[in-house]
Image (cartoon, rainbow, N blue to C red; front, top):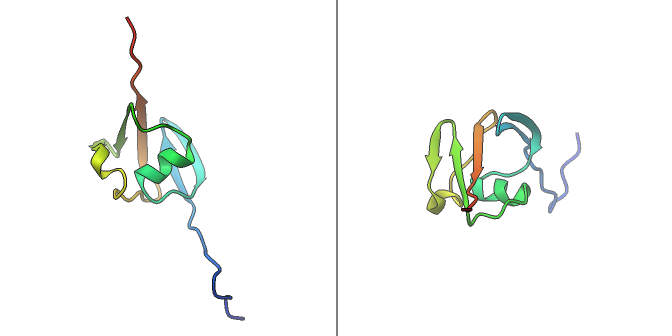
Length: 79
């Protein structure tokens, strides 16, 4: 087998269950990256991973794992 040229990066793609739907080929490693990948603005959302609420301050560092169950709730105001 040949060597992998320097500068080549590999991305591990995961399968997550997001809001009840299985989503394959997720490249995000953290909650923050997942929200960006899904094009969800972070200002008014709550995120739960495997039944645990992830605080907004932890979105940048909380690592997702293959098979995680993620719930994303967007708060909507109204009257």
